[in-house]
Image 1 (cartoon, rainbow, N blue to C red):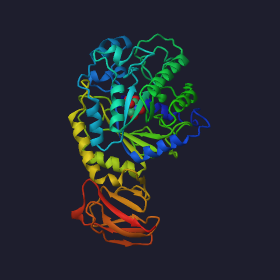
Image 2 (image 1 turned 90 degrees about the vertical axis):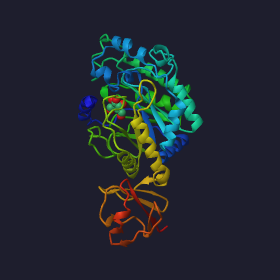
Image 3 (image 1 turned 120 degrees about the horizontal axis):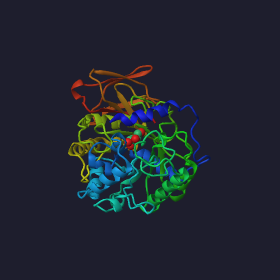
Image 4 (image 1 turned 60 degrees about the horizontal axis):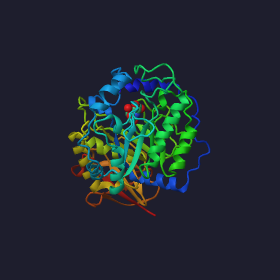
Length: 437
Ligand code: FHN
């Protein structure tokens, strides 16, 4: 399942060049700045990788990995995709119960198949599947009703379109003719983006992916980013190119790693910028539905990832890959519900907070809001925890869960917190430090 990584990684090696040309001189208008502020406060969203590939239950890279040609894919996948049990209202209810504030769903993944009723192509869910309905429209309507923001993940890389030429590092088994008009492909992408930005109400933003397939190409990002910002000035543009943000982007994303970390291999050149951060992660180890992947992270791991992301000042975008019938795997739905129960009690220490002020440490992280610092103790067993001294004097310390006072000693450069080992919560013991104004 990590096969895509071997294609992405070589791109990272050539990443010594400065950031690509994009929307130079972009000054975000007030509506965009307000949207960024909202985004940063929201802290938690659902990533949805869903497309005709769900039919195989072998992840979203099945076309490339199994060397399926365009003709075979067209014949076997969309005609078998019939998500008759898809219930947009139930999905959005699940998102709300999980404490998530937004959804980022694949409008088109690398297979090129559109999950909406595209007018510039018939390679879409309405025209090619027995289901025949626009799932993005249903989801957009329901998100509006239930006050959840909707973002679209849009693959710039396309394994299906004839004009995606010269080909990139991936999708080389699709048996397309060795010709194509690159700028016609980019026109097509811009037309599809225009459909998404004009036909589905206010969109939270566009989450691009796939630039890394052809880092040397002229992606005409300037034109594309301008188009998005013109059609919806408040829509946030982000791109998963694994590099420092390009001009015109409104947030910075990190795949499977906390900002500044690189355990998954994507963030070699991912210098931290000043835009809002978002980290995305899978529940098991797959983005698209994978019926053999049972390596589901526990609720504890997921809560701790959310908390760590917040401590690193990043949103947490947690993925599900719905099944071909339109339902969410029960193992994933139950975990989302449990994270939601945790947030129901502890959300005050996550939503609307900023990371820090203390640097993340192996024992945990801090978040803060106003004069309150939330010390999230994630991995600690001893009665005394030494944390760095916050920027202002500590007036009081207490357990967030019960309000019980926590004894502390102020050292020159540290605060010693006396924790009752019996009162430690295995998920997250939250100590509130009240700072002097
Ligand atoms: O190739 C994709 C992959 O399928 C998935 O969409 C992830 C999500 O971050 N991004 C790409 C790899 O970088």
